[in-house]
Length: 259
Image (tube, rainbow, N blue to C red; front, side, top):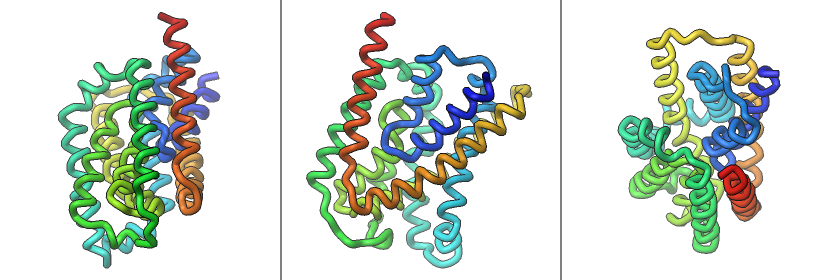
């Protein structure tokens, strides 16, 4: 049964890490709804999920990263600058966020609040035909701070960064690609940090669960990236916003019934 739960959580992580609906919220809510725990609530399994989504990012954007590292140093600099706010916030606030902001009612508020901001960004965003090269240093800093806010469960890293890009006048495609490039160092850092913690605690882990979670997150993450890149070329964020509102309603009802 735990293998099935590991696969489900891996699929959830892979899709929701990249869709603007908050992976943290879903990974909190699924075990909360279904009463899952045990081996799945360990650092080793967390590493597997983060490692899976990191693998998906590298597999999908490996040509982009080779270009950044070998040729396009300007965009590489923008990615590095944009990563700094979230990196600092993660180091300083991660423990506090994990203990103080993981309640279902907070997730309800952030799902709705950020959803409204996403709708505002769609109305305001310009429909340019630019590419990642059109991103300025100011854009990178603002989008970087938006990524830092995504530490709060229910915000969504992709949701906050794509929305910030739209407010800055970027196209959805440009904002989405930069969002994914920006998330790669952060997810890599989180994976490394959890791996170090796991090594320090000498945590025993079930390789079957770790492997199942990693593979499921990798596969679903890869397809989620491809789908979102293609979808946002032609469609606005509205359907994701409506999903956020519906999820918030379900969580609120469940919370009221349990309280």
